[in-house]
Length: 104
Image: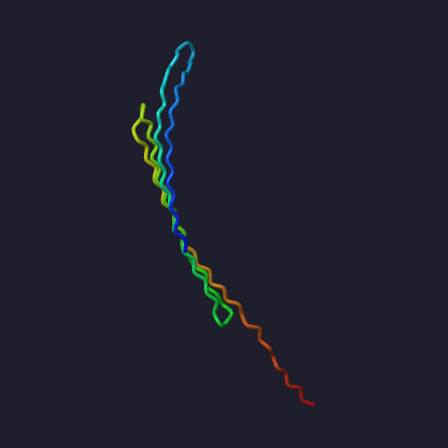
């Protein structure tokens, strides 16, 4: 079993000047970004006396992004949740021996 959590944040500011044809645009870009991410993984495996085995598990991830362009645009929120489950059953046949009786 594994449980993980991560938090990142970033504040960014820059002054930029754009030229299109003969028009000049000055802008001050201010960003305040945050990301929360987490995952939960659980795995199970077992081998049985008859040479068969079972492997099963689940993997889940969650991501939450907030991109905040303070100068111009409203807050952009991105959310992502992914999960998958798996199961593998392996059956290995036992080798069989044939005994032959020969008579004369």
